Amino acid sequence: MAQIHIENVRKDFGSFNAVKSSTFTIEDGEFFMLLGPSGCGKTTTLRMMAGLELPTSGEIYIDGEEVGQKPASQRDIAFVFQMFALYPHMNVGKNISYPLRCQGMSKAAVKKKVGEIAEILGITDILNTPVGGLSGGDRQRVALGRAIVRDPKAFFMDEPLGALDAEFREHMSEELRALHDRMSATTVYVTHDQLEAMQMGDKIVVMNHGSVEQFGVPQDIYDWPATKFVAQFIGSPPMNFLDFNGMIGKGGSEVHLHETTMSIPKSIDGANGALSFGVRPEHVRLDDAAPYRGRVKATEYLGTTQIVTLETANGDLKARVASSDKVTVGDQTGLTFDPRTITLFDAETGAALRSQANEGVLIHG
Ligand code: ATP
Image 1: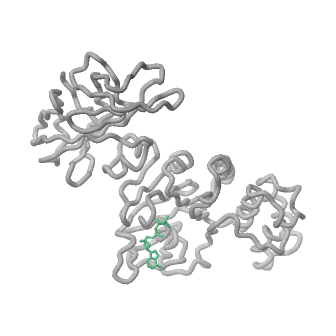
Image 2: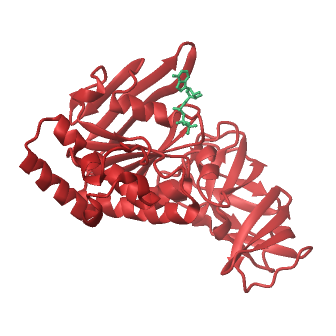
């Protein structure tokens, strides 16, 4: 098993900078997600860690050893590109044992190892079955078995569930996570699906335009996004932003959101212009008595909750409220926000403004 650390890793393709200087650590045994929109540099970052692409600059360490210029064959990792990539002319057992037979392992040792892996994956009864007639799920288990059988230091997976329909995808993601928990193998997993990253990952790196926007555990990334990009990319519906002007001086200050005044904690500094007030839909409350007002533009029924779109003086806002709440399009209503759940962003740079003491923003009517 392995700890992986990348330090200021950069990748250029000709004059195009695909990955900007990236630094993060994947701890031994972690299920680690590389998350971001298409083209943000996830696959390139994974391929550099795997040794399939050389970094233009920076260092890559596996268990403390610098491997940035070493080929993939010397890094002892297993790369699962697409779980469906099996050898069609071999049966299940032969597919799984292939890497061991290539290493020259004895027949008896191969048989023992394949038996153990088949047991873990629950495919003992199909070891002699040709792979051609297998279901999608079994094909994926066989492909995983072939990766696991070598006991590599780490598993690298690039959108392995991308081609599956939603229901089967959820089932396989649970199975993959359970398999990881059983084996505790360091796993690096590329996805553009924020829900998949939140559900499966111990830690997440969020990338955008080749840069690492944030790195941390799913809950911190959701609750305390480092940038507006992360706040929008994670969560469905995403975080709301209300823009307003305010100046934050050295000793903290007050800013005005329509007729509501907010006190900004003293320890937040760094912004001196337009601010964005970020609040997640589930932290917006409809309260007729509240001074900050909105008009209901639309409602979307989702079973136990509903999403209410509101027009405010500072832009549109979505609230997630109980579906039993009576809300009618055209209604005027008051809105309140739990101050401990608000994130303020510098509207120009998109960076979150942090209170060192994690104080909430105080709101006065
Ligand atoms: P996707 O999910 O769409 O694969 P990604 O986040 O994995 O996106 P990468 O595949 O890492 O993104 O690509 C990052 C950028 O680098 C893209 O703009 C891509 O076109 C470019 N790129 C990747 N490989 C090469 C290459 N060999 N030559 C030139 N440009 C490349």
